Image (cartoon, rainbow, N blue to C red; front, side, top):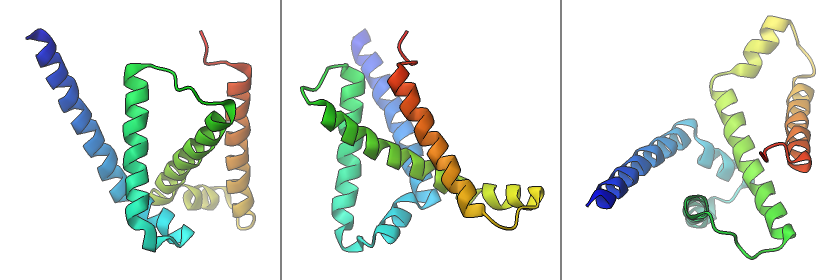
Length: 139
């Protein structure tokens, strides 16, 4: 009986968090922006299915902690796509709260804003690669 209630609480918490994530994605317009930029509006159902499948597989792999029998190249491709997705989230959030225009106005920067964004993205990418290469996350 105790296990049932723990499962119910965990399941309910997952629904709340998932609802918040979906609300944030819709509020920021991340999916519509990705589809607009990639010009793939005719494949909207496939994009939605891929997001749902990715969330479900990611949850299952995280919760049950089992290893998938795939090669290093699959992990590299998956990591690339995950990084692009998270980077898109970060940029969409920064765009919504107008981080870059506010900073540029405060610092008096009138030219080179695109280079600032590119160097931020490159720095984040290099920092992530260094983090994984040096295995800093391992205890």
